[in-house]
Image 1: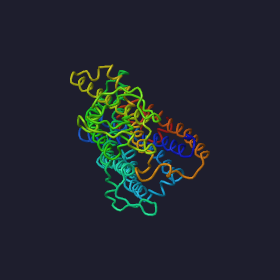
Image 2: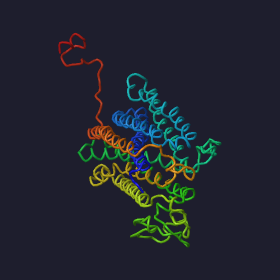
Image 3: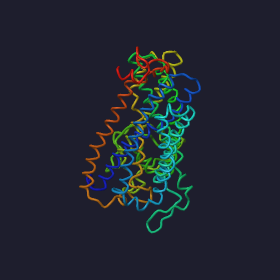
Image 4: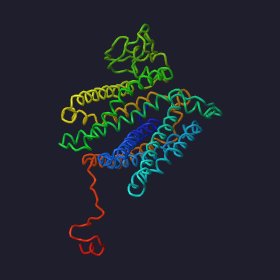
Length: 462
């Protein structure tokens, strides 16, 4: 297998661009809803600490939103330049779904984003809050359409093949395909976890620096409350998603578990190990008997199909899947431990004083992003060797372009992405390090400068 042929370079390029892209929309999705809650609390209570947090996190959201749009444009071009086979065969499905995303979600976000960011003194408070709600709604609608398109590639239904092309026959079945509800819930909650841990880590940083003002403590507390709800909920949704995947993509589950033989009378779980694709075995495996059956079938003796039941050409690459899933699941367990410790400290009245816990939350800041990327690797690599599962192979989806062109464009994209998005992330971290600042109170009757009158001519001689 040539790792530098056109197919693998095209896959590597798309993996790189989607990895950059998914980070920023995930931040935007979770952050937009957080901003809506902050503004609602400010309007309801009149507490200016909510306003200070709202204006601070609005800047972070704006940067993330802009970077997400830029990175997404490149992916759209790649469908034509690198994946023309996929676009030709599946374009009748993916084209309309992505168009619906633009016509609904993107227009909704773009239409109200300017009011949310720059309309503070230009529209009424209620109108501004409505704009914030519409931006938050737009991010969720965008998630809906993107996940509908991607879920169709995982569990396609509601279509027919005509002259080698996929055509829709039931749009309701296309959109609400078997994996869509689980993947939509899983991804949406993941976005809230991403934003929640970023906000909590920012609060932890400032608490460790000695700040005890209300905006810092309030953002730290609100993020931990959100994470306390979302983390166990994500575990429940993830379990349901796993059961759905076992039903519709059994080869993916076998590769995730490094399971080669179909074990009768109960399946063990490989905690760690190294799946060997050539030898068809998982080396150095540490197993727990029957635990695989309990997790994946909810029964003691449940049977899970092994990879040997699938032709070698239809097997996903197990080593990458095996460890990407364990990174995601392991971080999920650490998240649950973190929020549980936070609840215990809150009950003991030591949430803002336990420096060891604040260091833990700071270290967990990027955990949501890492788990998100690991989850997407598991999802997308597990679909291989199919672009549309069971219908269109990846090898038949790539454009007829040379490896030299793909290699050059890949190197250029890596350089540009690291420069552009590295700068954006640096600026976001710089803003977070400064933290929320109380907004100065302006007295319209006071002179603009001490000792001077509020007259233009007076100001000119300052």
